[in-house]
Image (tube, rainbow, N blue to C red; front, top):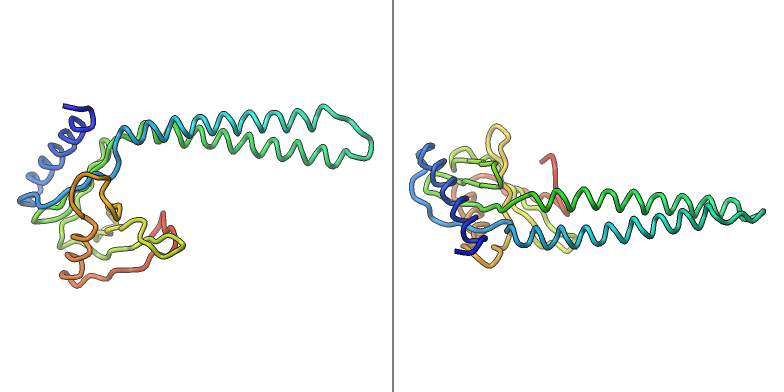
Amino acid sequence: MTEVAAKEDRLSVRAAQVAARDGLGERRAWQAEREIGANIFSAVAGLVMAAVLVGVGVLIFRAGSAVHIGGYHVLLLGLMAIGAVVFVGGVFVVGLSLRLAFAGAASTYLYDGGIVAVAGRRVDVIPWARIERLVVATSRSGKPTRFIVVGAGGGEVRINPKPLGRGDDVAGLVVSAVRQLGRPIVDGGPDADGEI
């Protein structure tokens, strides 16, 4: 069994345990939201990019601070400021990359009685009857980038519009279910994130 399959088995077992505890019935569909291998590749790419940003930032800063030409003092201070901003951007990318590396796998499962989302150690459950609305976040071109199921009481489950090559079309099934329940489907606008 591959590492990804083993991880998916653990997520599936946790989802089944929670669904049984909450009486959600049989599993009808699932999709992988995030896979561990993709996280590691993205984190390494981010760390490489961060190293380049930090290096360029230090070089620009040092170039601005090493040269002292009478009338060009403002230009040199500007170079130092640009170098500092690039350096800080590199440090920020390091933090994002490390967070991504340790994010773990995530999957969403649809049961007769509701949605179960498992991400790392976190498990979110929203029974169909407690869905308040579905928010559709879009790219600037208008294509869906994420579906956010908002439950009564503020719980959220985020669903990718396309499975990562494994699983069912959970987003499409959720949109159909929300329509059947008569709950609103709200346009979240371009790249909606955070408070909905």
